[in-house]
Image (cartoon, rainbow, N blue to C red; front, side, top):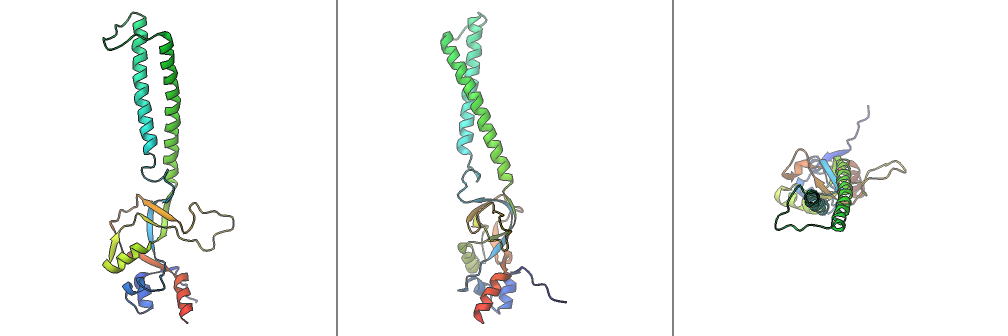
Length: 214
């Protein structure tokens, strides 16, 4: 019965296969692409909107609108009660004319619409973020590999590369362009370091190097 070849080998298995140390494989002039497993959110590096804190300006604007609208509503209520003789304004308040009250009401109505719009925008962003889950391999950046070769470990990366998918069906577009830099968030389980034990290599890349050496 034919042996089924694995899709990947661990760094340790590659080192044993080539009779090298893991560090020697990492520092090899062949520069084998190395991958690590990640379960979490992955975003295109340039996708500032969906990445962490990409909504800061919108959240701040929303809170400012809510504060302003609350102030307007309280003021309009007090002014209305004052006109009906049900409330006496304080010495710091000035009675508004009908035109001024109408202007404030228009502003309040506009803020109501803007608050709803921004709230929907943030809701949509949150839903889209949750659709950016990746449960699979990512390609480690050269800097991460160099630090692992030198120190045995590196801080778990915040950035990596989206790997290429071999034999992708024609017409099927990738959500993130293959080979592009991606930002990693909310990995599970949360890991502090990436080590050589986390790295794997594609058999296609291993075979390519071995074929060149023949």
